[in-house]
Length: 279
Image: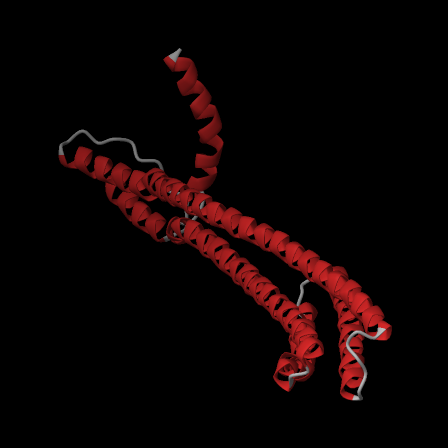
């Protein structure tokens, strides 16, 4: 059994080793030095790729957080504007109009921020869909603000809050507000789902990095062993052969030393020794 394994090993390793022995010593040295660097290069490439991917995903995660917060701010502006207008209709106090005025001033910048975040969404189709949904939401909020403005002007012009016209606008505004809340909630839900996907991607990359480090370590050990094995079978084997021949000559039991055929620096030394042994 052991002999069969040895024969199999010799059959597998023999041809490559004979080819390796024909390689000049300078080239052998370069190969044995370069082999361990392969694992370092592979590890560096994997780490760089993982870091670049992680940066892109983390940027997208930050954008999801900002989008969710901006949508929440938009919803708060609209709810406060509607609530304040109802307070004005009931009391006639101007202070209740402050949330409406605040919404009027801040809505353009709020949608500007949302549009900028949507425009940075990776992928042409998701980006177009998100921008389209924002346009629909902007249309709804514009209609709601126009209706609230009508209610304010109607009452400020002497109209009664109990007028049927106001009641119709209140019902209409309630419907708009329900649609705005629904759109914002759906939008935020979609962003949270995408955020969960990005977090899963980060976790997958983290696991991949751990695996890459482990594989790089295994590759480093393997290439280091291979470099040592090739050095042993190449340079050290030739040095050992020279040492054995010279020792046998000194001890008076000269051992046959075939004429060297390689033209590298080690081959020059072997030819010199061969000439000495022939004398």
